[in-house]
Image (cartoon, rainbow, N blue to C red; front, side, top):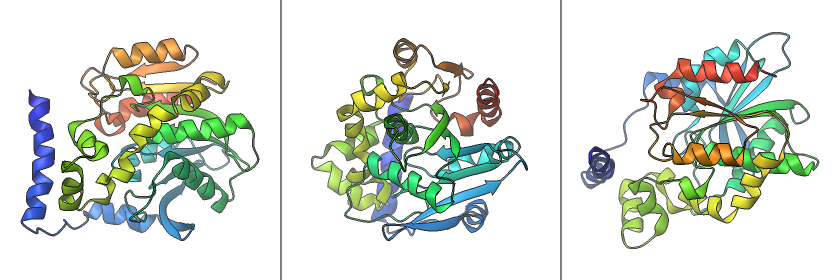
Length: 292
């Protein structure tokens, strides 16, 4: 019952704001700082925001962070400093349509394009031939799966992936439970264009939400990539996640990917474990990275 009221609230607040013509809030000082410390590169005429920090001197290790829906690279700010103590380069981007990156409309957003943008960023940084560790969450998990598929094909110009750590992403369409807001905006009907127009948020457009349908269409490609590669794979799981419910998700994950290791965080941790329990998340990730 409480979850139902939360979802009604998520719909009501932006609709009311749009109705009253309330201007969008100003960036907080923390977000201003995040933006000013980052950079932009251009991908096919579109500006993509990214962060690139130099950490441990002398270490060859690189980690690339892939954020979830409907947020941005700022999702990683609570564990950023901790990562710089272990890795030489810590890199994150705002996917196209998210955060400070461009939000073209109309545009056919796809997981394939987002994966190509990650590859382009690494080329822009001169790191295309380096082995990288991928750390992903939610929507970013699916982008990581596409990058893993390309890596498995061993084609030139693709990332060389050393390890992959996923977290609370709907990698199995059959156990993924989209929230009411996502369903309304994804599936069409009368409410979808009304909500999209009134909310005035590009990230809540139907185009961005088609990644849910793409997960179903390309399940064999993306789940198959996870099951067939030999690199170390780990999953960090917040078990209170309504999008990937316990225990159904975890049972299917362990059955499908028996070689992967799993870290289950405290019972009260939900869909954003890196924000809800940054220390627990960071410890779980470091335990994985230091295991090989």
